[in-house]
Length: 70
Image (cartoon, rainbow, N blue to C red; front, side, top):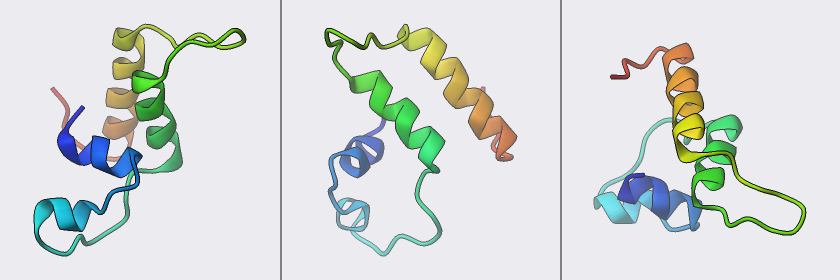
């Protein structure tokens, strides 16, 4: 997970982190949920999937959005 992704998930200003304005939309809701699962802790009623599985889902979603992954 990049520093920008961490900052976004924690509610920090990505523009401030980059030192310039941010253009375009942030991660889609599905991607945000997957990123949150990567850093989530298990509870009594929920267990995160293995990181490799979540990363594969993230890559598939990014490819579906037209990004080159690999």
